[in-house]
Image (cartoon, rainbow, N blue to C red; front, side, top):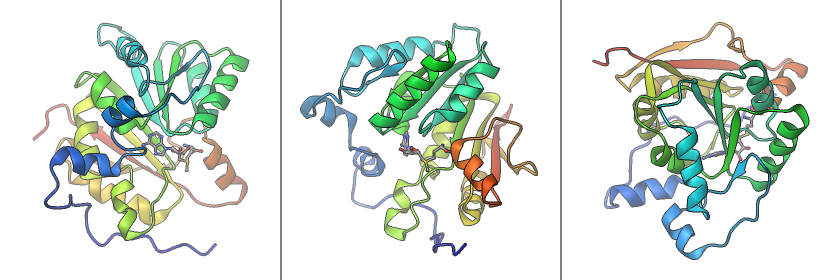
Length: 247
Ligand SMILES: C[S@@+](CC[C@H](N)C(=O)[O-])C[C@H]1O[C@@H](n2cnc3c(N)ncnc32)[C@H](O)[C@@H]1O
């Protein structure tokens, strides 16, 4: 399969002249949460597992309560769960774990919700919001056991690089959210993305980074992963473990 050119020229560097908040907002999907809360309209998303924390501050509170570090159950987050294929399998295999999924598309939230209902998932919440803006608001530092980023959009072009999920800011945030010994797991089918992301994650001193020999990482496959397997297309997995004692 012909692969599009993946830009790796330089690490994502913030545009000079913009204050940090504006720099961050430029990379977010839908723009700043505060502006949407003030001027936007509710998405109307529905489902017993689904939260719409941009428009309902009480949904943000529910998310924060679910992530409360006083709860002894492990806490894992998946960014970009799409139709919830992996999320459902993972939750059923790990009923004693708290699972929070983030998606930016309403239809995917509703499809994943239907799947959770069909299979009787009990230990999860799904949030319709850009994970990068909600996680800092609801997570206490050092409390996350695992962060899954599976087959993120590659954002091939140089001018779109700032939208990639993996960035120096995201790596620093993830290192802060994860407990010592916790990990960020990235899977992708774009070999250059794997190489680029691995290098970006290695720049974060709190992480010990490794390319996994088993690209499945011993987890249930995602929808994209199943499709790759059907086409005999290779996939890649990079794990960034939060050091017990960051340098
Ligand atoms: C290429 S799909 C991968 C889907 C799935 N993880 C899989 O492996 O089959 C990427 C998904 O991430 C979602 N997404 C992209 N940016 C996101 C963000 N900032 N927060 C939450 N979800 C996001 C997209 O809507 C899309 O469903």
